[in-house]
Structures are given as structure tokens and as C-alpha cells.
Amino acid sequence: MHWSGWGDPAKARELPEQVRTLLRDLLGVREPAVPAATMESVRLAPVALPERVLAALAGIVGEAHVRTDHEARVRHTRGKSTPDLLRMRAGDGSDAPDAVVLPGSHDEVAALLRVCADERVAVVPFGGGTSVVGGLVASRAGLDGVVALDLQRLDRLVSLDTESMTATLEPGLRAPDAERLLGEHGLTLGHFPQSYEYATLGGFAAARSSGQASAGYGRFDDLVVALTVATPEGTLELGRAPRSGAGPDLRQLVLGSEGAFGVITSLRLRVRRAPAERVYEGWRFGSFQEGSAALRALAQDGPLPTVLRLSDETETMIGLARPDAIGGGDTGCLVIAGHEGASVAGRREQAAAVLERLGGVPLGPEPGTAWEHGRFSAPYLRDSLLAAGATVETLETAGFWSNLPRLYDAVRLALLGALGSPLVMCHISHVYETGASLYFTVVTAQDGDPVEQWARAKEAVNAAIVEAGGTISHHHGVGRDHRQAYAAEVGPLGVEILRAVKARLDPAGILNPGVLVP
Ligand SMILES: Cc1cc2nc3c(=O)[nH]c(=O)nc-3n(C[C@H](O)[C@H](O)[C@H](O)COP(=O)(O)OP(=O)(O)OC[C@H]3O[C@@H](n4cnc5c(N)ncnc54)[C@H](O)[C@@H]3O)c2cc1C
Image (cartoon, rainbow, N blue to C red; front, side, top):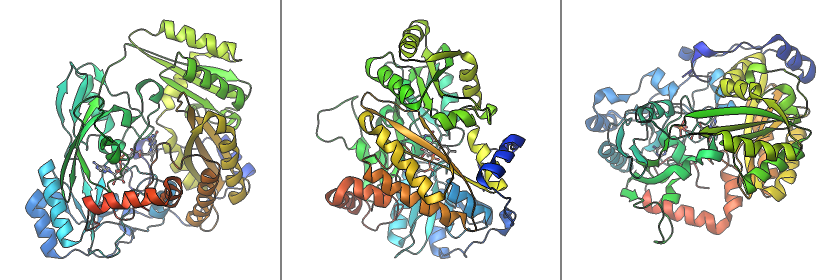
């Protein structure tokens, strides 16, 4: 993973000339005057942890698995939001952990948490490091240091139960490795977020991730049937049946807890047979409103495709749904409908009939294939845009169908008000019978302080989402960036409940302090 950008540096993408022209002429983008920092030039504070504490950590995991070197600390600084990348490009390593610790088992995690609680050291569980909501930055207030708890050594497929169609896997497994291990048995999780190449199973559960095929396979939290969690106060083993009537479901307290309540050390997940057939195709609708009505019909009356997404007019015109065709200048609104399974012909025909009845024009497989090929490449484009002097960032929300137009307008207006004349694009890519998510991509010219510029815009959007009745996140999570809006969403009593849970599981307040809990 590139330390100040996204993914494999070998896959970096040049901006097409027409995009450069668009940036310059439409948005007034100019190249930044200062070049991006090198890894060596990133400024870090000295390691704050005393030798005694480092020795105690090494006593649990072995010396080789406690790292305090410059590179390890830089690579575990923050996540991959645009402000995170802008700060790293500016050489700002002020949120770096003092040490990176790599446990190899649940027992080692539990022992590390006890030492850190005794020594008042903050612990940041670190999966793939792809958080986009500030979920990897711990507050140091009242604590003597910060360690990043990198879970990459917990990377096994522990067991398979093909009768129940579940697999027990460790949290540090990256998604492609999990798919490879399951693929050897003809199985899949079906979880393909855009961060698929780097994100881990533990991170998916801790941040309630949702993948591009969520319509067919469900969100990641739908896949979790059981989990093991290490806390400073002991271990939680949750989930012993597919569904249970035994009181509130404590698994739900861990899903989305972003390392603030404990460290997930094992996950039992629902698996599916790997599909024999996959077909993705494009449809054109006259407007976002018409396209939304068609998606709603499929979500409510079926048949629901495995992948279902609708780009608004601007996203369709720019071609962002198909990054290989960026700058394409298409009109209308593009829908991608994908069908996966043992045999898809029947469902595909029925879905096509619904789309056609509601005004869709079939575009054939070409847009679907282009989307499939480009589905993980947009984040690489972000690096090129940042280097060119544009800020590009994404944000998301969800709401009920009846409220979706209001939410869409509110977010757009907030962005236009805060940024002048940015390019604002939107798509729907997760649908439910009762509503859907809205996912926005914003491009604007960087001003003298792009981090502050985006912080202002984000504050305006958060307020607009709360005011318009949407949720502050459909799948990115709360982290540090959404804490205030989350507090508004759950109300004062809800906040007290979260604090009480935190106080019981983590009385010393070492687990990801400053994240999630308002
Ligand atoms: C380019 C890009 C595209 C993205 N696309 C999507 C998308 O399509 N869908 C989506 O849902 N998200 C997406 N995300 C957001 C991100 O990938 C998800 O939030 C993902 O779930 C994070 O996984 P991770 O392993 O990287 O976790 P990290 O970023 O390492 O951690 C996320 C949070 O979970 C905590 N955590 C991590 N592991 C554990 C554990 N084992 N136990 C307890 N807490 C833990 C961390 O402390 C942190 O608070 C995207 C991010 C980027 C940068």
C-alpha cells in the first residue's frame, strides 16, 4: 500500500488530457506549489513509550513484532480519507503511534490489552488501514502513549462448516486472501467494497462495511453469525445460532464499534457457493428520479439483482461509474444491474422486464463489463487528482425512499454552499425495500489550506444530513469525523448508553480513545 496514497504504486493512473482540461477550465484547478513529502521527510514526534513498556509488549509478542522504526510508524498513521492523504503529502506525521505491535493470537491480544490498561497506553486496532472517517487516530489525553495493534498476523481460515455454510476466519485477513482461501473450497463471502484489495475482515465488521454486491450477498454485518472479542476486562464469545430470541443481540454492539469496545479476534461468517455465472449490464434512464423509481421497484417487488447501482446525471456524464471511460460525456442516468449465481438467465429476464417497463433503455453488457473492470480503480484516480491540485473526496448517507430526494438536495446544497462551484456527483449502490444509500463524490480546486477547506464543507454536510433526517453513515462508520452527528442521531440517552458500555469494557479508556463514543 502506498504510504501517502492508495494501493499499489505500480497501478498509479495518469489523468487523461480531457480531465486536466475539465479541471482547469471548469473548476480552476492549479498544480500545488509545494511537491508531496517523501517518506523520510515525514515529521514524527519522538517515541513517548518508556523502554519498560516496550519490553513488556515484546515479552508478549516477541521483539520482532514490536516496531518503533520511522517507516512502520508512518505506515500506521491515520487512514485513507482525502484529509488523511493531504496531511501525509504535507509530511505531517503528528498522529503517528509510538509503536506498532503485531500479535499472533487471541491470547496475545488479550495480554497486550491488560498491559496497555495497566500502563495507560492507547490501543488502536489496525486492519487494512483504509478507514475514511478518522477511525485510526487515538486521542492521547490522559494517556502515556499510543500503539497501533496491527492484526495482519491473524490471517487464518480456522475452520469450515459446509453443512451450515459458515467459515471461521481471523480478522487480519485481507479480503482477497479470504476469497482465495474460500475459493479453494468453491465458496465466497461475496463482499467486494471498493477498498477490497486492502481492507480486512476485522475492519469490515468493526466499521459495518457494505460491498458493491450488497443487494445480492448482504452487508458485511449480515454475514457475521458469531465473533470473539478481546477486551481489557475479559473475552466476549457472541453468537451460537443463526438467529436468537434470547434478549438483545450483543453481536450488534460489537459490529460498528470501531475498536472502541474491544478487539475482534475471530469471526464466523456466512459463506455462499462461488457463482458459476456473472453478468453485468447497463441501462439508461432519463433522470435520477426515474432511475430511483426503477431501483425501488426491484428492491420492493423483485427480482433483486446481485449488483444494482444508479449514477445521477453528473456522475453519468463524467463517466465515474466506469473509470476506464472517464470523461465519456454520456447523457441520462446509468444503471448497472449485475446477476450472479448458478444460473442467472431467468432472474435477468425478469429484472430486465421491470427496468424496461419503468423507462429503462438497455445498453447491453459493455457498460457492465467496463464497470466490472474499473470497479477498484477510482481510488487510484484520486491520487492523480490530488497531485494535480484538485481535492476529491467521497461521503455517504442513507434514508427511506420517501425522504431520499430531500436528502439528495440537502447534501448537494450544503456542498455547493461550502465550496462555491464544486463538481458534485452521486450514485445509489445499496438498496433495501425501505430505502437506499446515497454516495457522493466531490471534486473542487484546492485552496491554500485544503484540509481546512474540506473540514468546513464536511461540517456543513454533516449538519445537512442530520437536519434532513438521514443517517450520518451508511457504511463508512463514525470514527472521529462523525462523532458529533452520531450523538445527534442517537440522542443524549443513547450517548449515555454508549459511554456506559465503554466504561464497563474499557475502564481505563485505552481502546481507540476519541473514536466512535461522543
Ligand atoms: C478507496 C476506499 C474505498 C472504500 N470503499 C468502501 C466500500 O465500498 N464500502 C465500505 O463499506 N467501505 C469502504 N471504504 C472504507 C473502509 O475500507 C471500510 O471502513 C473497511 O471496513 C475498513 O477495513 P480495514 O481493514 O481497512 O479497517 P481499518 O481502517 O484498519 O479500521 C477501521 C476501524 O475498525 C477498527 N478495527 C479494525 N480492525 C479491528 C478489529 N479486528 N477489531 C476491532 N476493531 C477493529 C479500527 O480501529 C478502525 O476504527 C473505503 C475506503 C477507501 C479508502
